[in-house]
Image (cartoon, rainbow, N blue to C red):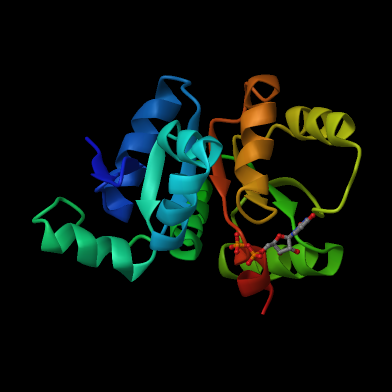
Length: 193
Ligand code: UDP
């Protein structure tokens, strides 16, 4: 079920509903991608068909930005709550810990990603961290084989948009064991603070 804003797809699902669907998809070994949509991205997509395709081809387009929620309410749509990228990531970390899914963190500056993981581990001690990398490496092939070998089932990619979504699109077929991909923009900076 999707809702459309100027031909850009949004999943009208709550955090809980997304997690429930993800659990089913993981059991079926299906890969899922999560992208945040806000009014700015809807406008970018009007000018840039590649961005529109990236959004519409994602498994879950979360209704980030209060503007999407308001627009949906105005047209009596299905979006029930705002689903932000940072909060979605928090919920996914809890889910990963409870379902024993190892997590990989890719993006941001070295000290930022390290500090973010330290804070997250303090909050969720039973989280399995498969590995991490800063977002300024040039050896993409090597990085992808490291992620593949790490045993990660979930990855957060924090390179900014649409760079992170393009990275996911380029590499998802080489990362068959990773089942959940979320592009999280500046979220590692938030967790590191
Ligand atoms: N970043 C990165 N590699 C790059 C460019 C950016 O890892 O080559 C990181 C940057 O350090 C920051 C994040 O990507 O942590 C971008 O956050 P921003 O808030 O700009 O992204 P947005 O949420 O606006 O897409």
